Length: 208
Image 1 (tube, one colour):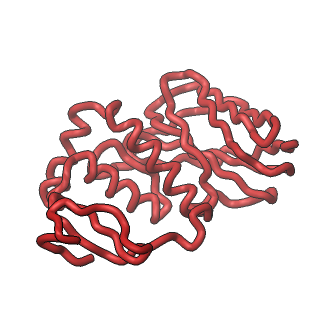
Image 2 (image 1 turned 45 degrees about the vertical axis):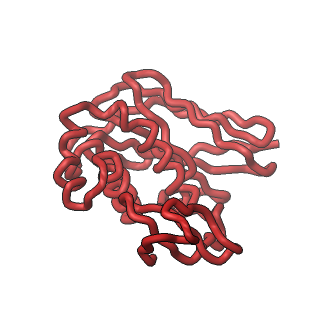
Image 3 (image 1 turned 180 degrees about the vertical axis):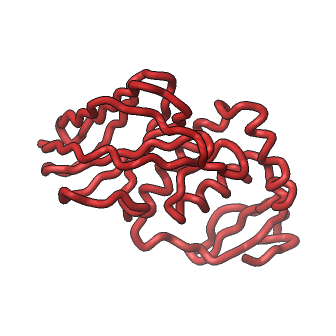
C-alpha cells in the first residue's frame, strides 16, 4: 500500500483502475495499492470469515456499554474506532480458531449455553437448522459447521454460519443454496468472553 497526496489528479479518488490498482482511504489518508482478488472467494476459510464478520458487525450494537468501553485502549493504540478494534481483534482470534469476545481482552472463563436436541430439516437446496437453548448461561452465539462427509472435526475451514443466542429462544440458521446431496453438521457454543464450547455432535440432512 502506498500513501498518496493527490491520487488520479484528485484528493478523493476511489475505486479501481484498469483492473490493476485501486484507490481508497484508510484512517482518513488516501492511498493506492494493487487490486487483489481472492483465488477462491467461496473457500471454506472465506465463507467462515464472512460468517463471523456478519455476526460481529450485526451484534456490536447489542454489546453492553461497559464492554464496548473495554475496546478504547486497543482502539487508541491502533488509531481506529472501538468498533474497528473489536472487529479486527475478533477476526484475528478466529484465524487462530478462537471464539470471538464482546470484551477486550477475551477472558474465556464464562459458561457456554446448554442446548437440547438439534434438528436439521432438509428442503429444496436448503437446510434449516433448529438449535433449542435449554439454559442460556453466558452464551453469546452458536457456530455452525458443515462437511460433505460424516465424522468430521470442526475447524476454521468448515464454519458456514453463526447464530445469536437470545435467552432460551431457539436459534435458527438457514444453510442455502446447496446442491442436492447429503450434508453433515456440527455445532459449538461460545460465550461473551470468548470461551468456546465442545462439539455438540453431528446432524445430517439430504437436500433435493
